[in-house]
Length: 218
Image (tube, rainbow, N blue to C red; front, top):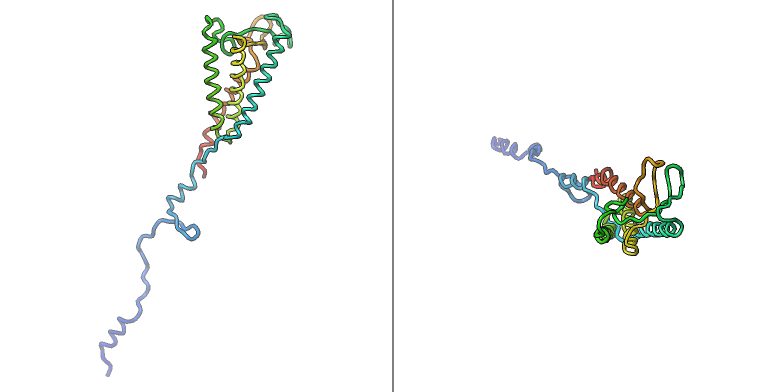
């Protein structure tokens, strides 16, 4: 006669249905054979790009600065040998003359009428600026071509005018932009053009390109 306890024991010995695991799952994403937390995975895809400096490539920009210096000194030599002081030679009437002039101040005759102290002040300032630009060109981002171009142009212009101050005690100018006799712009030179255009390129890079280089990668 069957034992009633056997049926109850057999029911308890039957395999129970698989229960659904409702425990919270760890927030992770699998990458290959390892697991990476999702928070780290998100951060890794939004990293700020690493900036690589010019390094040895800065010598390319030094060469450009040297070219500006050579052109600047050559054109000043031509002005000294071919032109007469303050005697304008018409080039494009009535807008452009070659007029030899001496500037004892800064670019575009700034502080030209000071008492003589400006020679050493601007010479020291140009020397410090040139040293700063030489070092900064080494560290400037390699991809920032416009920035490096602007820095090289400013460097060439600053050294071009510095050479004049040390050799002659003044800067040689000869480019005379005017409109007939109604308006005259301060006489300037190639070095002044390099400085002015270089500053414009640096400002453009700061306003429009610098933030794009620092944007995190998506």
